[in-house]
Image 1 (cartoon, one colour):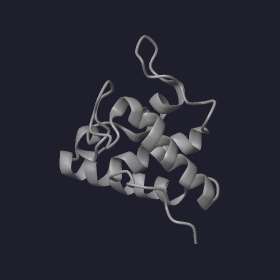
Image 2 (cartoon, rainbow, N blue to C red; image 1 turned 135 degrees about the horizontal axis):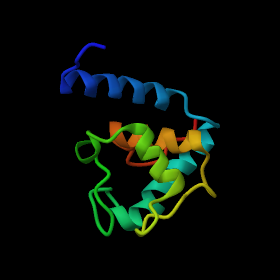
Image 3 (cartoon, rainbow, N blue to C red; image 1 turned 90 degrees about the vertical axis):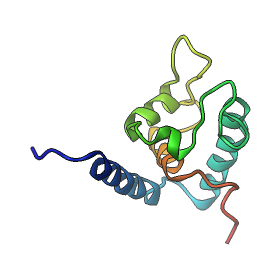
Image 4 (cartoon, rainbow, N blue to C red; image 1 turned 180 degrees about the vertical axis):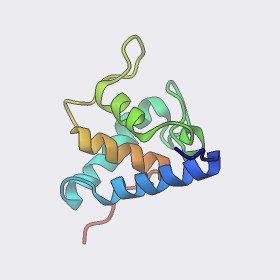
Length: 115
């Protein structure tokens, strides 16, 4: 297997995340719900601008070295022994992966507008 440089790995991750983001499950209305949920519910701990608070920042810079699958697992299953709850009652695994990809790319400021 070839050795990749860090910038090359980040580019590969970004492309993979872009693909995950493009394949968001559900309807545009569900996307709006997910954006609202992250901004309001996750924002209550991670800061309303996702720049940190009780929880760590969820900015692209802060998450750049985190694997998208690991982030999705944290969203879906939570982190036992920490204030991070599991969100599996509210999102599917595919939606958790979409949210993680969106966080890596810079989470939308507001829900996508209705067509």
